[in-house]
Length: 175
Picture 1: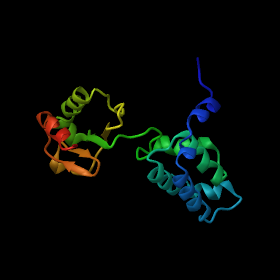
Picture 2: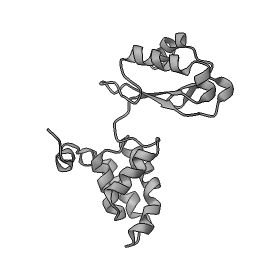
Picture 3: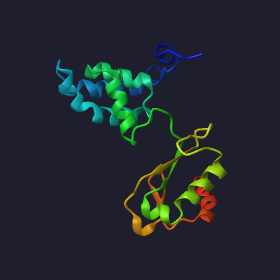
Picture 4: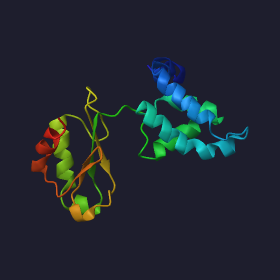
């Protein structure tokens, strides 16, 4: 059975479940110099999504629709930006966002094995979040710290010269 957009929106009530965040986003958007020309308002889309994600933690369809309506643009334009930029997410993230750099230097030095070890220990695949919303696991193309390869980032903390044997220690740091 397929789910229609309207059915998904009925279940996605984050925009209404967080009235303080909704009000803060509305105040922010109302403070932008918006016009009646959607093509001009689209220039505020990325900064508006940054603000929305900071307030809600992620960008489900209800938040996307709220931003689209305020800017006077189509929901598909909002989703196009969210799906293009890896910074944005339409799913909740865990408290600990673990990202393994898979850039060339890191990959050559064993990033694949490190990622496999996180998958094994966390029981989730790359791009997934644990059911308890404690961990999210992802891969990054390059963090720009090639001299520390392979690199793992947990939230804003950078771990360098990581080996698969260090993964349990990194997870212990998440206590």
